Structures are given as structure tokens and as C-alpha cells.
Length: 223
Length: 293
Ligand SMILES: Nc1ncnc2c1ncn2[C@@H]1O[C@H](COP(=O)(O)OP(=O)(O)O)[C@@H](O)[C@H]1O
Ligand SMILES: [Mg+2]
Image (cartoon, rainbow over all chains, first blue to last red; front, side):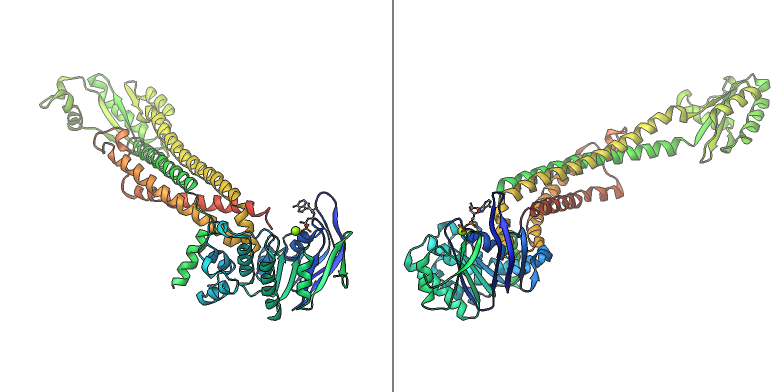
């Protein structure tokens, strides 16, 4: 569904990737790993069309990203749920409205029951009316996940979803992502937390990709 | 139904409220509308004046003949002949003794006998639309009837009509400048709101909002604020204009009050302000979105 072919990218400094390729197929589960600063976030941003590659082709849901209009990109993003590294909420709206925002901007009406079920699923029923700055780190991550899945996206991309939360909460988040994968969604998680990858591999067949020396390699047995 | 309203409310709320900018925008829109009312009032009154002066007075002129009693009739006939042969003269009327008496009565009192006074003979000229050549006519009159003097009101009236017309233009230019200044002000306010909400716009784009959705959220807000302010300003401006002394006092200053269909032009101020705000915000939003994926 998301296909990167011979992608190169770099900020003004220097080249971060050189001719890397990757494919996110339906129902797949991928981890993207590598040390901090390796370019995980950058690669994910390329996947959700927040950045355009300097070389190579990206196709999303069968369409070349370079040939898509801004409205096409908006439409494609509705089919990709993203949990951003820094979560990014509208701080003046309560959690429940932030979670429903993707529906709102797509002019779709939130079903109150679905919204409540979703809140319960991520364990935020009691925090529905809180403002984002009042949430703890774990609560923010779960709210971000709820917002990412509210449109029933075909692909879920999570950038360091367990970044600054304790292990117990990390496992819970991982459990939610695995559950989504069992429901047929493709999942792509960027993390430098090898424990998280190990915990996942026990429960789901996941591929692990590592960024090293500007290339992408399949990481295997050593994990 | 309630869902629809809920959604619409939420669309407005994705942009965080900013009380101060909102009030500034409203205040400026009100002030601009207030000024626009006066620019319009000035322009309309000047236009009315120019029209009246040129239509009431411009189409007539008089020839005054002063001659010894024996030559009066001959010179009058000569004048009429010359006038009838002059292009641009539509009609010629020799004023009778009774006409002249009526004209002089306010000054000299009733019961006056014209025979006892050396009253000049007056000949009234009604011009055709294209008018006549006053200089040429004067020369011909001099040759044919030495006692005839052409009194051409339009000579001294012309600069007044021109001044009134220029005043009307100035009023219109002021109104246009006010509209442009409103546009510039809204652009500045919208730019600052868009810059302050850059992060909000980024989030909206990332979760799949189309540009049109984001533009609408800002445009809606600024258009409504401007419309509200302009309504208030127009209302206050018109109240002030209506409080000026009404017509009847005579003179230009008392003619500022709108008349008849002119009300329509004032009613245009709020919607035109709103339209200016709509376009300015839209352009500002399109510019802001250019840098956001
Ligand atoms: N917007 C940016 N402009 C310039 N350099 C950037 C930007 N974002 C990231 N970088 C640099 O690119 C490299 C990769 O960053 P990132 O993709 O965030 O890595 P990771 O997510 O693996 O930690 C880092 O060296 C970072 O400093
Ligand atoms: Mg990162």
C-alpha cells in the first residue's frame, strides 16, 4: 500500500538515505529501528507525504506521490493513521474533540457510541473532557493512537509510541497496535527500544528494518 | 440535524479563539465603515450639486439690449435674427414688458411703470444640448446690435460645476481607498492569525484536512468579524449623517443627507466590507498554506 523505491533524502546538511526501498503491504507489521538521529522519523514522514524525496519514487495506495494534488494527499492521509512522535494536538480543544478531529475535517459525523467505545479501548473514558496539556505522557500517546485509528485507516504509522512512558504502559500500547494488526491493518512502528520489538515478536510475526549507513537492512536473529 | 450544527460549530473552533485580534479587526472595520459613510455622503451630495447646477442653469443665457428708445425695436429684431441663425440656440424669447416687470418687482416694488425707467430689453436664450459658441455670438452681436450684451451664466458657473464634479470624484476615491485600507488591514490581521496558528494548520493537514477546510475556518471568522464591525460603523455613520441639519437650510453642508435611492449605496458598505475581508483572508490563507505539506 505504501511503496518506496530507491528513495534518497537529506536535509540541508547531508544525505540521510541513499537509494532505499521498502514496501508496506496489507496486514503487515513492521518495526523501523536504528539509533537516535538515524532518520526513522524522516522515513516515516516520507511515508505519510509530509516530506518529498529528493530521489526515487513513493507510491501510496497505488498512486505516485509526486503526481498527487494537495487534495489527493489529504484524501490519502485519511487512510493512514499516524501517531506522531510529539503527538501534536489542538491544545484548546478537549481530548474527545481532538480524537474526533479527523472525522470532523472529513465532514463525517462522529457516532457518539463509537467515540465512547474508542475512548474506553484506549482507557481514556474519564479524560474525555480534559485538555491535551493536562494529559500525562502515556495518556497523550493513547489519545494520539485513538485519533490515528478513528478513520479506520488501512495503515497505522507510529513514531516512538512508547517514547517517554513506562514499560507497563508501553506494553499496553503495543497490545493495542497488535490488536489493530489482527483486525487487518498494516502497522509500521519506529522505535529504538529493542525490548519493545522483542515483546512484539513473541506475539506477532513482525519484520524489523534497521537504518544503518544510509541504507535499510533487514534485522533478524540478533534480536 | 444537531449533528450538522455540532460539526459546523467544531469547524469554527479548530482555530483557537483570539479575543484581542478579533476585537481589533471589528473595531477597524467599524471605523472604516464610519469613514466610508462620510466619503459616500460627500460624493453623493457633490454629485447632486453638480447635476443640479449644470442642468438648472447651464441651458439658458440672456442678451441684454440697452439702446435709445428709437433704436430699441430695430436692435431687438437684429438680435433675434442673429440668435436664430446661431447653431446651438434652441429657442429665443423676447421678454415682454409684463415679464420684465415681474422680474423687477421684488427689487423695485409693485405698481412700477417701466416707461419711466431706461430698462433694457431682455432676450432669453434656451440652448440646445450641444450649446453655442459664446465668443462667436458675442462678435456677431457687436456687429449687428451694438447695444446688445450677452450674459452667459455658464461662464462663471463652469468652474463651480467642475469643482463639484471633482469633489464627487474625491469622495469616490476616498471610498475606494477606505476599501483598500480595509483589505490591507484584514490581510495583516489574517497573516498574523495564520502565523500564530501555523502549528494548528500543520496538525489539520496531517490528519487529512483539505486546504479548503482550513481556508474556510479562517475566512469564515474574519468575514463575520468584519461584517459585524462594518454594520456597526455604518449604523453609527448614518446616524451621524442624519443628525446633520436637514435640507431647507440651503447650501452644501445641509445637503449631505441621503435622498431616496441613495440609501442603497450606504447599505452596500457592510457587504462590500465583508467581501473585501473574504478575499483578503482567502489570499492570505492560500499564501500561508503554500509552505505547509
Ligand atoms: N527539519 C529538519 N531539518 C534539518 N535537519 C533535520 C530535521 N529533522 C531532522 N533532522 C536531522 O536529520 C537526522 C535524522 O533525524 P530523525 O529522522 O528525526 O531521526 P530519528 O527519528 O531516527 O531520531 C538528524 O540528524 C536530525 O538532526
Ligand atoms: Mg524520531
